[in-house]
Length: 291
Image (cartoon, rainbow, N blue to C red):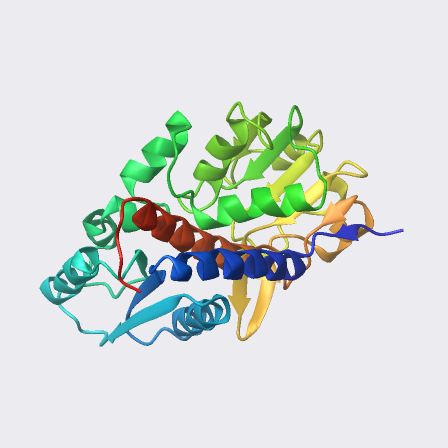
């Protein structure tokens, strides 16, 4: 029969419409949300992703700030720009697009971002808040996966979630997010990775599977319990084609599945915008201007 589609593109459109209303309310108070990006070098995938982020900003009414530095940029120049964004009251949040050229330390750049302006939600302060269950920006892809499930009516509470992948951007924060004792979480979460022997035996009992290993076609149809919910969060570029961690046959067994294109990616970008608008609302609550 085939799985129902977890349509990230459609949900992201709904979220952008909601954010447009929130931005309008902020502008009426004299606060225009601002989102900044720093791109170093000419990685085509990074450049395309940053371009899409700025298009998204324009759609919902967020002012976008963009800096494109040459690939040979020294650390002091990058950190000076980070400091400028940290100090700019019109920039509610920003990100340093990765990967960075080899002469630049990605961890040092992340640590240099003001945690209150960390729209990626990956600063150690914000990851610590996530572990504690405290308020703060949540990493965009995990937040997007949770929102995608919720808006399709997929129950998470009390379910067994298996996450394949332990990376900083998806696997680890998603495990913390879905295990929190709160609505749309409170799951039993198992984290595995490609170094685990007999990986399929861990995946088969799961109610919800999130593949975030970046290993093309890793998850096979016979790994999936019939009717399970399967999210392909890991992707690999093969030329200009995006290859999912999910084998095509998974869609014949699963109850719900993300499409190869238009699943998690649009949700990640939507959550980035939401983090920026959240930050602008905090600025408005403290009396900050800058529209």
